[in-house]
Length: 241
Image: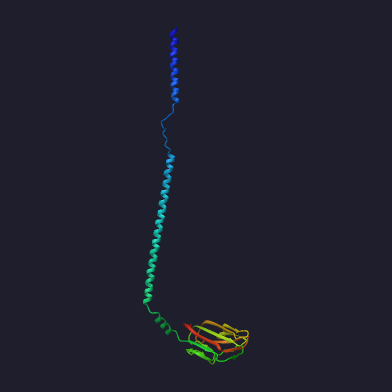
């Protein structure tokens, strides 16, 4: 009867020993480092960032290279144009001298010009012609000192200039007339003094057109001499139409 009790006791001791050993092992720290699992998403993200940066750098380099090529092309164009301009300047310098050009132009253009002035004071009526009796220059003999009128000998573009001085403390209004048509007015007058008025006209004339200075209705009628002048000249000759 004692044998079964001893067997039970031995079995109980073995079980308790096994449990104690298992508990002791469970309390010991795990000193070995645990391996980190591979994270494919993190690795892929880093690779993607590098690829994007490299792609951006490559794009910027290509754009810079293209810009340099464009600048180089523009520079070559400017240099070519500069050489052409230099060649043109050399050609102009080696062509006909300016003096000869002006000389040939003067020979082709007819000598038509005049300058006349009043030699004394005049009291005029409205629409009277101011006759500038003293002729200083009359190239082409187109100005008539007796009538005060210029007659165009050839068709062309002419310039005319007139200056009228009023009497003392008076006023007078005059105009440059072409074939009875007014083209420019002069007002002359001053208080307690003489007043001077001037004007000019550039006009196209046909052969035989007449130009003169006329007194108008407004104001006084005194035209002071010596300071009152009338002049004109041809600028370019034209073909008769």
